Length: 143
Image 1 (spheres, rainbow, N blue to C red):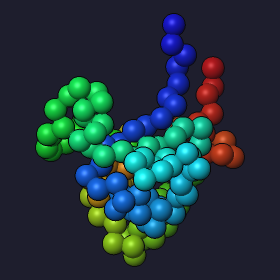
Image 2: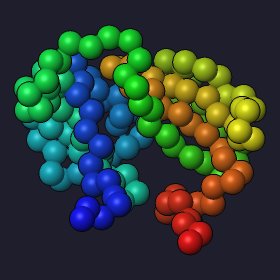
Image 3: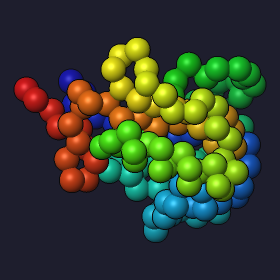
Image 4: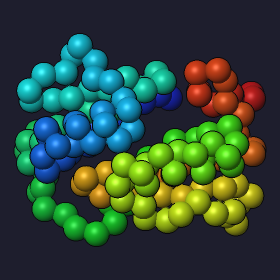
């Protein structure tokens, strides 16, 4: 049986160098020591984000690398307040990050908006009043 966890979120990117710079400069994230000229790793809270050339990632998975439009998934960064969402959007806008949807109150009772990285991977930046975060930003599981 598989444990319910994610170890790495891997994104296939068109330009590894440019995408790595995006996450370093726009989001302010630091590369891990496991990164090299072929792959970039960013330590998130308990999960790694990896960037790898799209064509090579598709080849490894034995699938076609050609794909357009909505990818069928988003990545989410949750905050502790609406004000934090607004602050992050202001910071990203000042760095010319592509804003897809400005933050707004949403139907499920939260507050969120979307930005895109260089490969149009969508990042939802959200405040969810029903989702408690611990000091490291992990969700608190109320079993």
